[in-house]
Length: 125
Image (cartoon, rainbow, N blue to C red; front, side, top):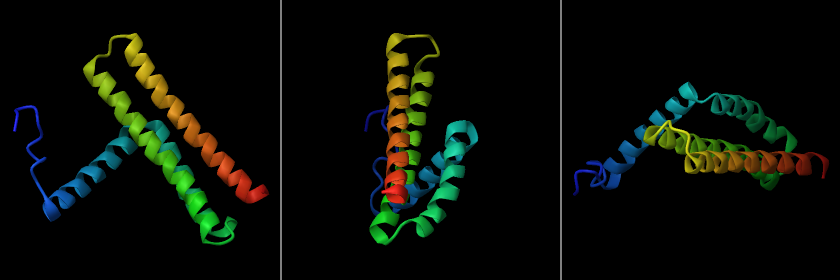
C-alpha cells in the first residue's frame, strides 16, 4: 500500500461495512452542520417523504415520489463533496474550480426539476 492510500482500504467483510456505516454517519453530520442547502433539503424531505404515503396511489407512485426526494439529497451530498474537495485543493479563483462547482450546482438543479416534475405528474397527472 502506498503512503497516499487509506489504511482502511484493506478492510473486508463486516469490518468494512461497519466502518463504512460510521463514515456515512459522519458524512451526514458534516453535511448537515456545514451545508445550508442540505439542511433545507432534509427539512423538505422530512415533509415530503411522509406526505408521499398520502399522495401516492399504490407502491409505484409512492416509490417514485420518495425516490425523487432521496435523489435530490444524494446529488446535494455529491455536490457538497465536490465543493469541499475543490476548496481543499485551493481557494484561489480558477476556471476549472468554477467549472467543477457550477457543474455540481447544475446537477442539483436537475435533481430539483426531476423531483418537482415527478410530484406534479403524480398529483396532477
